[in-house]
Length: 291
Image 1 (cartoon, rainbow, N blue to C red):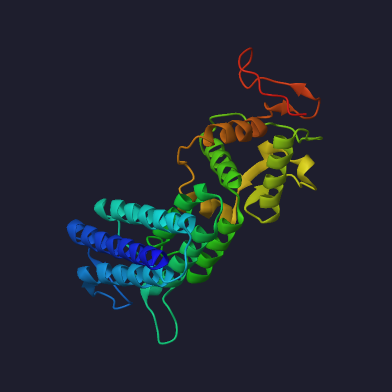
Image 2 (image 1 turned 30 degrees about the vertical axis):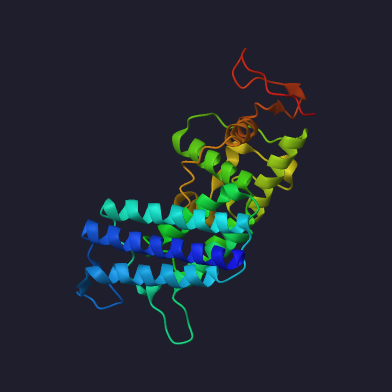
């Protein structure tokens, strides 16, 4: 009985999510050309297509046996996606008008396939802090026709592989490169010491090997990273954009994670070349020496 109640509650949430999106479209007066009929503008169809996608996939997921944590993560991802879609529609943004929402006999639409992938990822993701970023990815792809079905699935797979800290790394590296707000360490690390520094270096190197982060200097291993030579490339740059990593969700852990990441990128956590403990601000706060 309890499991059945949980399935019903998630199905209800999915229905409310779909209905609110439809209402937001109607309220915004959005008109969208749908399904390749050039010159045909159908406002109501956009809401119907999105509504069907959300109700269908939400109901399918709700029929699975979800534990309390899984149900919370899936529900949260749905709610976050709903809010983002509603905000975009209210701002006058147009959903993609290609065949992303079109289905065929025996073949789901790309939107349905991607939504199920996002909800499954949220369901199984033990790092719950990633859920809102998965929701952002899905919602934004609905407004980016340049992202093909294969590319969308690839982006989701990559996002699912990354840790929460790797998202924070992409966020801070992208922000620092865009704004020039903080100077990146200008020389390669010759030696990385301390548990946190080693972990960050390894996670950066992993993304380098995944071709999410590029480097103008060849990095042979995690200890040879030159922060000033790094850049976001390919799918890494697209994840930064579509997951809206320029703005991170605030939580109790984020501040500490950002301090260690930014400190590593600036070479201020610990000068790993010399072993000297250094303050991120001269003469002020000292970073804990983890070596």
